[in-house]
Image (cartoon, rainbow over all chains, first blue to last red; front, side, top):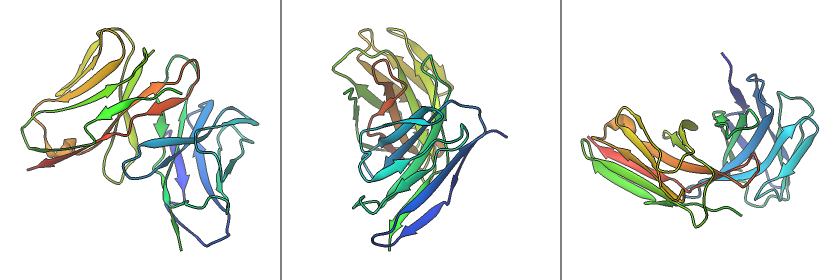
Length: 113
Length: 111
């Protein structure tokens, strides 16, 4: 079945450590997105990419980095510069054009040790 | 940038009661999408509205887009425990492929 796979499901980070969250899709979608979800805050966009080797900052990009070397993959690195990383991270993908719906992965829950 | 206000933030109902959540914008919207996120789950697309005054139904769910395309509502008739979750509206940010999400309405249903 086609879908979006995020891993790991749970992740713990130590102070000063960078961690990378994986997102892979086999839907042949061009656009991919990373969101952060905090209780009562809805979904806030971190980064998005519409094409391989290109990506744009969202509303809360500080302390995060991404890469898009393959169409299927859009990993997110939470760097040590992100001082409050504890959150639920969701990856999504969509076709381009015509207000397409977004398809989400199951998410990664990141906590600080 | 584009913002959308969603109310109420929380709604608790008895099973069988109706439920409505609203999304409001100060600017004219090109479209609006609705998503449902079950507890512990991820958002799942429900429907999209693009036309002024549009009304769409999915079983007990009724979605409306305002005549001025500045507001939308999701109404659930006779709620069931399976309706529990957080309902989000989302709008396309002018001319981009980005969605801006409302903060969601968390629905709990007492059996």
